[in-house]
Amino acid sequence: MSAYLVDLREPDDRLCLYFVPCTVLNVYGGGMALVRVCPMEGPGKTTMEFDGYDVDEGEKCEEHYEFLRHAALANHRLCEEVQYNRER
Image 1 (cartoon, rainbow, N blue to C red):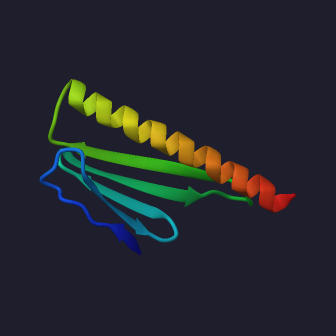
Image 2 (cartoon, rainbow, N blue to C red):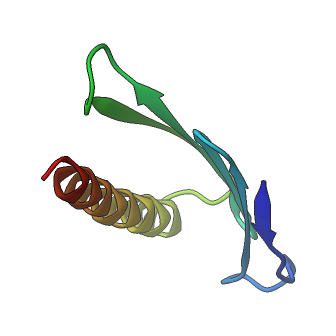
């Protein structure tokens, strides 16, 4: 497990805990998110599952969701590229 420590009293700071090999817990000023990486049958197939828990509602919650989605898609692309290069 690795962690980046921050001051959670700051609204833009967050605590990210990585439980290798397949779980990430993000805790931030307005809530938390749990990300699970789930290998599927056969090599090279994986899904990512997200659960978000926000105390904020409305626009602030939507902004956070979009940030998480953007980061997850970027990470997914990176993982695919690494896997592709490993198989070459």
